[in-house]
Image (cartoon, rainbow, N blue to C red; front, side):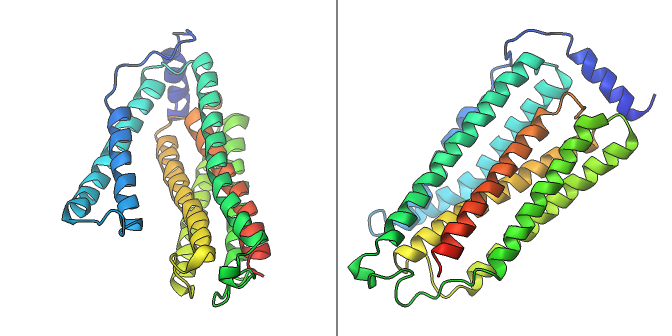
Length: 287
């Protein structure tokens, strides 16, 4: 019996408990993660509004201290989820259905989050204020060329959407064969590589832009929207790296791979947001 068949057998054995309830052990990681995330947000706000909340040495120390603790809490939380899913068998079919509803609602909340930033952009660009010369982009702002780096990043993200779908199909078609396993691993690796390339190109774009985030409403909405999207790309890339490591350790089967499915949903959401962002901010808003 090879490793894939053994992993399948163990997975089926662990799922003998077919109850519809998400029964897990009490965990301190969710509340700790929320607490240190709140601290990080507070420090970020203090840096952005230094005229209201002057960032003292305590704020700097708090930021440096809270980031690694936040990362440790995330790792510990994810480790508990992997244990209860793969090794303890708590993620039954009914439980997976509930988790799918949860990730769907999370993505809806992310859509509304970006909707607020798009609203700010269109509110400022459709009817430019007299204080910025009644034109968009404002006087003194040289918008980035639409069909250079932004278009290249669009092609990269669209290609990553194809490769991550390839990985998903390779798993759900027949993950028992070594050929499909190689295809899914290769497709995941390619998607991660696309995400890393996208991040570096966007960093290069920021370095060579001729305006900063505090150079008026255009710069603020531009960096806020594209920067938050870049943060989501980085999070999605880490999500896919975790899934690749799990897949290398035979955690996924053709009917038990919700962790990968959630990462794929999230990545497609990032792709769609970028398309709206490219059309509205780079193409329409940058002319």
